[in-house]
Length: 171
Image (cartoon, rainbow, N blue to C red; front, side):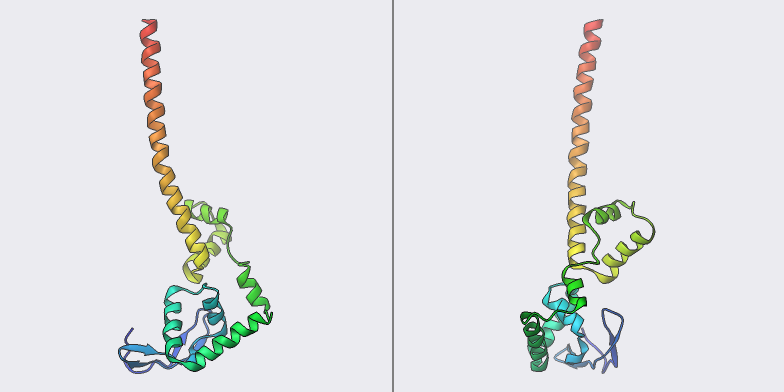
């Protein structure tokens, strides 16, 4: 990503303004460690951050010792058993729709507030687990559609044969 000069702020995944400066160096954007919220770093550790954000965090980690120290502190806090309510909420994926709800969303039969929430969860939050589960459901749905039509064809052909045999025996 190339930029023209500096960006005074960036929007975080939760919609909060994060103070970050971006400067060009070797045609890559360099972000200060404060550009990443604690929630984003925890999502990175849980492999729950969007791929674009993961790439930015990893690029910053290569060049910034203070960010590596901050991440190490978060890991040490987890290892010591320090968990916030928000972290438990994220780890247990309490906001994720069920697989059945994802399937209903895929079929377009999920309506109302729940339908809106599932769409928000998939499109805005971009939950990696739910997006992966939806892709799996989509693949299974597409695989299941073809064999069903083949089965119907076989049933029809076998029924036509039986009808011919029974029609021919009666005549």
